[in-house]
Length: 366
Ligand SMILES: Nc1ncnc2c1ncn2[C@@H]1O[C@H](COP(=O)(O)OP(=O)(O)OP(=O)(O)O)[C@@H](O)[C@H]1O
Ligand SMILES: [Mg+2]
Image 1 (cartoon, rainbow, N blue to C red):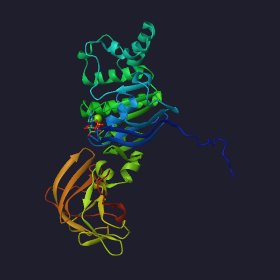
Image 2 (tube, rainbow, N blue to C red):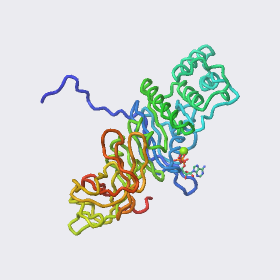
Image 3 (cartoon, protein in one colour):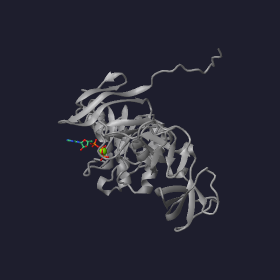
């Protein structure tokens, strides 16, 4: 056997582990026996709709609310019963939770004062953290005189100042405008990569999660529906919920033939087997191919439709097509020499059978 000199044996790199972590409010299970491993230095996203338990999970990890059962393990040690200040976690809240009457410096140094650091060391560390978040020289400003984006960075500097074992970010960008949000998310990612801090980043914005996270855990009703890289989640969603929640999608009315193939509308479009039992058939808008009404399609089938609306989203154009299948959304690059269509244009459309996603129809999840 040819063993390479650089071969590194596989070791478990789990830094933070949740074991059957559960939170109940009365009989309501806000978080349901969650199991999760976060690797050392990993940037993990919690993504899911409002109320699915993202903040509750994060707050249990940070020790801000008590868990009902299960364990939280960091570096092999069970920290579930430690108070928050002994867990060494840096936390950034959705609403910054800064002290408005204090200066920037006083806010950043807050955790260090609580840890009884000497004043000189606090000053030094605070100045370094402010440099890290590009706010050098702002130390003596009052929080109320800082912009939203600057306050967000102060909150980040405060969380980083204590050299946390784990950084917990709960929708840290939600109050910022789109442009600043994008700039800040790259900045957070750069700081995280440079410092190597294991980080959990909560968001309900799928673009944000897919853009910066190493892995994304898609949550629903208190459990993790799927965990994986951005491309896993997007290209190979485990359930129709994930497919629906992450990225845009078309839901197709489909009928299964006796031989297991799938029919959409009047046409056989899938010559491969779908799961048995009731299914939903989904296709991503960028997989829908558009053709001129007068030409024949290259997909082996073609549906007729008419462009109902066109939205230009910068580098892609989004078409809504009225057809016998209902409204179908298609996305095309707006750059390059692709044919563009206008509202009212008759078109044909179709797709490769392999681009369809089939999921068994789910009953209500418990
Ligand atoms: N103190 C509480 N008492 C009862 N139910 C609560 C309490 N705190 C949270 N919940 C419920 O627990 C569920 C999960 O809440 P959580 O705040 O974790 O959601 P989230 O995923 O962070 O949502 P959002 O995206 O809106 O912030 C919700 O249904 C919420 O109403
Ligand atoms: Mg929340």
